[in-house]
Image (cartoon, rainbow, N blue to C red; front, side):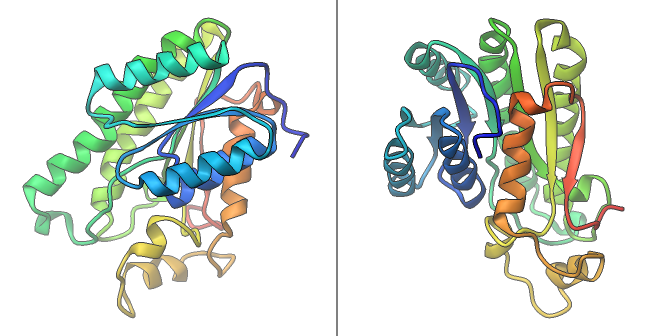
Length: 253
């Protein structure tokens, strides 16, 4: 993975203890990148991930951060910058567990919580980190969902908030490019890790519906997603900005 180029400094991953975030942190460590990452509930997984990347010879840092707390999010980002000297990459890889049901059947409180966690949480991420990225340029990468590009019935609690995340990324790409900041989304399809492994879906349910529309006729391997996320964060993707790249086996085609 040394072919992925990163400048001196470090990366921040928001959500580094879940299935997707853990793999991204691990791959960044493989690339020799110092990584600060957050967790919310799974402290043990975060500590294990920290130990793993430090064995690779890079510096790490973890902290419990509720992204709905702007002050705490900003403090964490500033501490990471102080530790690493510079922040060159920011990755948003977090989100709530979702109920899969028609949008009109959703509990309003669940809708409000999901909107807050995704949109407000990501807004706090950019408020906390874009000023740091301005100091030397860099990348902002957000994990969203392929359902933004091709809606699947009963997936509204995922696609609606993540569409807001995508448009915030677009705003950063358009408005902060003059500071050398790139912003992109990775629209995640059915990957054999993370939330897609936790969803309870009966035969004929959302996972079966999704798989029937995947031309490659298989779930994605975790590494196929992690490689794309780290590529977009790296200098190898230096002229890619403002994009939403589906990693979905052709589902959104």
